[in-house]
Amino acid sequence: MDGLLVSISKNTSCYDHFEMLKKNNIPVVLFDRIPKISNIHYVACDMKTGTKEAVDFLLKKGHRIIGMINGPETLLACQERLEGYLQAIKKNRLKFDPLLIVSSNLTTQNTYDAIKQLLSLTRKPTAIVTFNDYVALDAIQYAKQSKLKINKDICFVSYANLPIIHYMESSPLASVEQYPYLQGQNAKETLLELISGKQLQDGNDVVYYKIILESQLVIHDKK
Image (cartoon, rainbow, N blue to C red; front, side, top):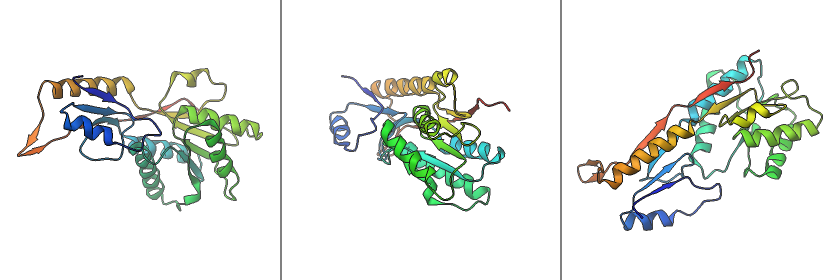
Protein backbone atom coordinates (compact mmCIF):
# COMPACT_ATOMS: atom_id res chain seq x y z
CA MET A 1 0.00 0.00 0.00
CA ASP A 2 1.47 3.35 -1.10
CA GLY A 3 -0.85 5.65 0.82
CA LEU A 4 -4.27 6.14 2.37
CA LEU A 5 -7.13 8.63 2.09
CA VAL A 6 -9.19 8.55 5.29
CA SER A 7 -12.39 10.09 6.59
CA ILE A 8 -12.91 8.89 10.16
CA SER A 9 -16.20 7.48 11.41
CA LYS A 10 -18.34 9.19 14.01
CA ASN A 11 -17.27 6.52 16.54
CA THR A 12 -13.50 6.74 16.00
CA SER A 13 -11.79 7.62 19.28
CA CYS A 14 -8.47 5.75 19.08
CA TYR A 15 -5.88 6.87 16.54
CA ASP A 16 -2.98 4.48 17.30
CA HIS A 17 -3.28 2.92 13.85
CA PHE A 18 -2.27 6.24 12.27
CA GLU A 19 0.94 6.18 14.30
CA MET A 20 1.63 2.67 13.04
CA LEU A 21 1.25 3.85 9.44
CA LYS A 22 3.55 6.81 10.12
CA LYS A 23 6.24 4.51 11.54
CA ASN A 24 6.03 2.42 8.37
CA ASN A 25 6.36 5.56 6.19
CA ILE A 26 2.89 5.14 4.69
CA PRO A 27 1.46 8.62 4.02
CA VAL A 28 -2.08 9.36 5.15
CA VAL A 29 -4.29 12.29 4.15
CA LEU A 30 -7.50 12.81 6.10
CA PHE A 31 -10.50 14.61 4.62
CA ASP A 32 -13.91 15.91 5.69
CA ARG A 33 -14.13 14.27 9.14
CA ILE A 34 -10.89 15.23 10.85
CA PRO A 35 -9.88 14.04 14.35
CA LYS A 36 -8.68 16.55 16.92
CA ILE A 37 -5.04 15.41 16.78
CA SER A 38 -1.88 17.18 15.65
CA ASN A 39 0.76 16.27 13.06
CA ILE A 40 -1.57 15.05 10.32
CA HIS A 41 -2.15 15.98 6.70
CA TYR A 42 -5.74 16.93 6.02
CA VAL A 43 -8.25 18.61 3.71
CA ALA A 44 -11.38 20.05 5.27
CA CYS A 45 -14.06 22.69 4.81
CA ASP A 46 -14.28 25.82 6.97
CA MET A 47 -17.25 25.05 9.19
CA LYS A 48 -16.73 28.11 11.36
CA THR A 49 -17.47 30.56 8.55
CA GLY A 50 -20.40 28.49 7.29
CA THR A 51 -21.93 28.42 10.75
CA LYS A 52 -21.62 32.18 11.16
CA GLU A 53 -23.37 32.62 7.81
CA ALA A 54 -26.12 30.21 8.90
CA VAL A 55 -26.76 32.01 12.19
CA ASP A 56 -26.64 35.45 10.51
CA PHE A 57 -29.16 34.20 7.95
CA LEU A 58 -31.57 33.11 10.69
CA LEU A 59 -31.12 36.37 12.59
CA LYS A 60 -32.05 38.31 9.46
CA LYS A 61 -35.17 36.13 9.30
CA GLY A 62 -36.10 37.51 12.72
CA HIS A 63 -35.07 34.57 14.92
CA ARG A 64 -33.51 35.41 18.27
CA ILE A 65 -33.59 32.02 20.03
CA ILE A 66 -31.48 29.72 17.85
CA GLY A 67 -30.60 26.20 18.92
CA MET A 68 -27.91 23.87 17.63
CA ILE A 69 -27.83 20.08 17.31
CA ASN A 70 -24.12 19.39 17.00
CA GLY A 71 -22.36 16.08 16.34
CA PRO A 72 -19.79 13.96 18.19
CA GLU A 73 -17.26 16.02 20.17
CA THR A 74 -14.37 13.94 18.78
CA LEU A 75 -14.73 15.67 15.39
CA LEU A 76 -12.85 18.91 14.69
CA ALA A 77 -15.78 20.10 12.55
CA CYS A 78 -18.08 19.99 15.60
CA GLN A 79 -15.76 22.28 17.52
CA GLU A 80 -15.68 24.66 14.54
CA ARG A 81 -19.47 24.65 14.29
CA LEU A 82 -19.74 25.61 17.96
CA GLU A 83 -17.09 28.35 17.63
CA GLY A 84 -18.89 29.80 14.60
CA TYR A 85 -22.20 29.77 16.50
CA LEU A 86 -20.65 31.53 19.49
CA GLN A 87 -18.95 34.15 17.30
CA ALA A 88 -22.21 34.93 15.50
CA ILE A 89 -24.12 35.24 18.79
CA LYS A 90 -21.45 37.53 20.24
CA LYS A 91 -21.20 39.66 17.09
CA ASN A 92 -24.94 40.28 17.16
CA ARG A 93 -24.85 41.09 20.90
CA LEU A 94 -27.17 38.30 21.91
CA LYS A 95 -27.01 36.51 25.24
CA PHE A 96 -25.50 33.04 24.95
CA ASP A 97 -27.67 30.29 26.46
CA PRO A 98 -25.68 27.01 26.79
CA LEU A 99 -28.95 25.06 27.03
CA LEU A 100 -29.52 25.81 23.35
CA ILE A 101 -26.52 23.65 22.39
CA VAL A 102 -27.08 19.87 22.38
CA SER A 103 -25.24 16.99 20.72
CA SER A 104 -26.30 13.93 18.76
CA ASN A 105 -24.38 10.77 17.93
CA LEU A 106 -26.15 11.07 14.55
CA THR A 107 -28.57 8.20 15.06
CA THR A 108 -32.26 8.92 14.53
CA GLN A 109 -33.20 8.20 18.15
CA ASN A 110 -30.39 10.34 19.54
CA THR A 111 -31.42 13.21 17.27
CA TYR A 112 -35.01 12.78 18.46
CA ASP A 113 -33.75 13.02 22.05
CA ALA A 114 -31.73 16.14 21.18
CA ILE A 115 -34.60 18.07 19.60
CA LYS A 116 -36.97 16.91 22.34
CA GLN A 117 -34.56 18.46 24.84
CA LEU A 118 -34.52 21.74 22.92
CA LEU A 119 -38.29 21.88 22.57
CA SER A 120 -38.75 21.26 26.30
CA LEU A 121 -36.88 24.46 27.22
CA THR A 122 -38.72 27.42 28.69
CA ARG A 123 -37.07 29.55 25.98
CA LYS A 124 -37.88 27.29 23.05
CA PRO A 125 -35.81 27.88 19.92
CA THR A 126 -37.67 29.11 16.86
CA ALA A 127 -34.80 27.93 14.64
CA ILE A 128 -32.23 25.13 14.88
CA VAL A 129 -28.89 24.61 13.15
CA THR A 130 -28.33 20.86 12.67
CA PHE A 131 -25.10 18.90 12.14
CA ASN A 132 -26.05 17.84 8.60
CA ASP A 133 -29.01 17.32 6.28
CA TYR A 134 -29.74 13.82 7.61
CA VAL A 135 -29.92 15.13 11.17
CA ALA A 136 -32.18 17.91 9.89
CA LEU A 137 -34.43 15.31 8.28
CA ASP A 138 -34.78 13.42 11.57
CA ALA A 139 -35.31 16.64 13.53
CA ILE A 140 -37.95 17.83 11.06
CA GLN A 141 -39.72 14.48 11.32
CA TYR A 142 -39.85 14.78 15.11
CA ALA A 143 -41.08 18.39 14.92
CA LYS A 144 -43.89 17.38 12.56
CA GLN A 145 -44.89 14.56 14.91
CA SER A 146 -45.03 17.21 17.64
CA LYS A 147 -47.59 19.12 15.52
CA LEU A 148 -45.17 21.95 14.68
CA LYS A 149 -45.38 23.60 11.28
CA ILE A 150 -42.00 23.49 9.58
CA ASN A 151 -40.62 26.88 8.52
CA LYS A 152 -43.45 28.57 10.45
CA ASP A 153 -43.37 27.35 14.05
CA ILE A 154 -39.77 26.23 13.72
CA CYS A 155 -37.07 26.56 11.04
CA PHE A 156 -33.94 24.59 10.26
CA VAL A 157 -30.56 25.23 8.65
CA SER A 158 -28.15 22.36 8.08
CA TYR A 159 -24.87 21.32 6.43
CA ALA A 160 -23.79 19.27 3.38
CA ASN A 161 -26.36 20.61 0.86
CA LEU A 162 -27.21 17.10 -0.29
CA PRO A 163 -29.45 16.51 -3.35
CA ILE A 164 -32.01 14.88 -1.01
CA ILE A 165 -33.04 18.37 0.14
CA HIS A 166 -34.78 19.00 -3.18
CA TYR A 167 -37.00 15.93 -2.69
CA MET A 168 -38.05 16.75 0.87
CA GLU A 169 -41.60 17.95 1.45
CA SER A 170 -40.34 20.09 4.34
CA SER A 171 -36.69 20.98 3.84
CA PRO A 172 -34.20 23.21 5.71
CA LEU A 173 -34.28 26.87 4.73
CA ALA A 174 -30.59 26.65 3.83
CA SER A 175 -27.65 24.27 3.97
CA VAL A 176 -23.89 24.85 4.16
CA GLU A 177 -22.13 23.49 1.06
CA GLN A 178 -18.98 21.56 2.01
CA TYR A 179 -17.74 20.80 -1.53
CA PRO A 180 -17.00 17.06 -1.12
CA TYR A 181 -15.73 16.74 -4.72
CA LEU A 182 -13.12 19.45 -4.18
CA GLN A 183 -12.17 17.92 -0.83
CA GLY A 184 -11.59 14.56 -2.50
CA GLN A 185 -9.68 16.12 -5.37
CA ASN A 186 -7.37 18.09 -3.06
CA ALA A 187 -6.85 15.08 -0.81
CA LYS A 188 -5.89 12.90 -3.77
CA GLU A 189 -3.44 15.48 -5.13
CA THR A 190 -1.88 15.93 -1.69
CA LEU A 191 -1.45 12.17 -1.23
CA LEU A 192 0.16 11.80 -4.65
CA GLU A 193 2.64 14.51 -3.73
CA LEU A 194 3.49 12.71 -0.49
CA ILE A 195 3.87 9.39 -2.30
CA SER A 196 6.22 10.99 -4.84
CA GLY A 197 8.40 12.21 -1.98
CA LYS A 198 7.45 15.89 -2.09
CA GLN A 199 7.33 16.18 1.69
CA LEU A 200 7.75 19.79 2.79
CA GLN A 201 10.40 20.56 5.42
CA ASP A 202 10.98 23.52 7.72
CA GLY A 203 14.56 22.91 8.73
CA ASN A 204 14.47 19.47 10.32
CA ASP A 205 10.74 19.61 10.96
CA VAL A 206 8.07 18.10 8.73
CA VAL A 207 5.48 20.57 7.41
CA TYR A 208 1.99 19.11 7.41
CA TYR A 209 -0.53 19.95 4.71
CA LYS A 210 -3.59 21.64 6.23
CA ILE A 211 -5.87 22.60 3.34
CA ILE A 212 -9.04 24.46 4.27
CA LEU A 213 -11.75 25.06 1.66
CA GLU A 214 -14.26 27.88 2.07
CA SER A 215 -17.82 26.74 2.80
CA GLN A 216 -20.88 28.52 1.41
CA LEU A 217 -24.41 28.85 2.72
CA VAL A 218 -26.84 27.79 0.00
CA ILE A 219 -30.27 29.33 0.57
CA HIS A 220 -33.28 27.24 -0.51
CA ASP A 221 -35.95 29.54 0.87
CA LYS A 222 -36.05 32.53 -1.48
CA LYS A 223 -38.68 34.50 0.44
